[in-house]
Amino acid sequence: MKREETIRAMAGSIVLVTLALGHLWSPWWHLVTALVGASLFQSAFTKVCPMEMLLAALGVKEAGPQSGAGGEGGS
Figure 1: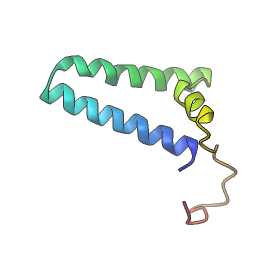
Figure 2: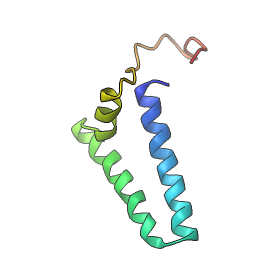
Figure 3: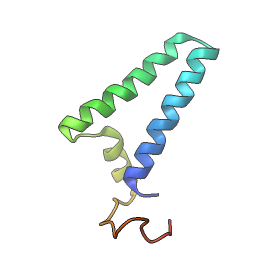
């Protein structure tokens, strides 16, 4: 997976897991959901994403140029 895909997958996973934990365990888990949402919102304007910086440091490759609809079909 490329960096952008990894960020989207991680953010979506965290939101779904913390919503479930908030429903089943404690509503305080919804604060994590709000934190993820706030981070996504601020990164839309500032172009600064802490998760992107972490993944870059871990060596996850950045997505290259796209070549038409459907891409190359590989991963």
